[in-house]
Length: 219
Ligand code: G6P
Ligand code: MG
Image (cartoon, rainbow, N blue to C red; front, side, top):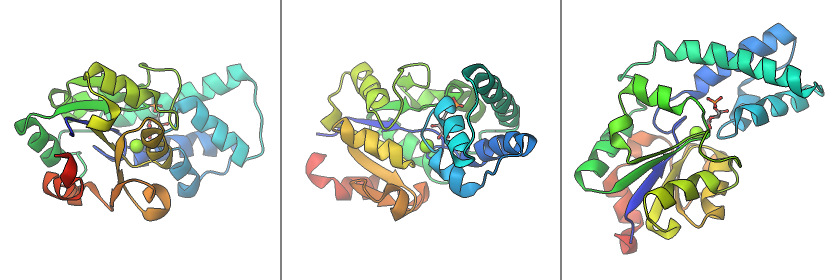
């Protein structure tokens, strides 16, 4: 039986992918690196340090660890500054409605994000109250596609993976959910999250009614 839900944050609850893009783009422009939305899509769900490595590989460049860390911090400063203008109006359409519905129906809810800025984002959205457990980039060391962040959430909720549905917009996030034995809902195009158990183009279609209809034997 489904007792809990675990949500990714960026690209599921709110559209920070564009803010991450702008911050990486500014750094890349300063460094003379190529960076576009296609590369940015590959960064969905993966940690900050893994992300800068993807950008370097894309540019056939190598840098020492210390320089990498400095540049990642520079990107993060740009990103965190952009979060200051985020408000409770910045949920992706449908996200707040689903979180509210899950609360009223008494489901357990956890956040399973790779971001070290997740608490800041939740505060800007005024969303912290929707979550019983917050798993973020500081909670586990192995990031998606490893299942650790979702296993952390399930364990803190006192649930088994098969009692939880994971919501993800990243290819690596669906891989992580599957690796951990969770049910999965993908948000986004088929070529990104088509391997999820159930997929919606956007959160606006991801109503509890639709979810219960699909996973009907589990409710
Ligand atoms: C999320 C985003 C990724 C980002 C990661 C780390 O998973 O989808 O694009 O790289 O978080 O975010 P952070 O805020 O810690 O740099
Ligand atoms: Mg995401």
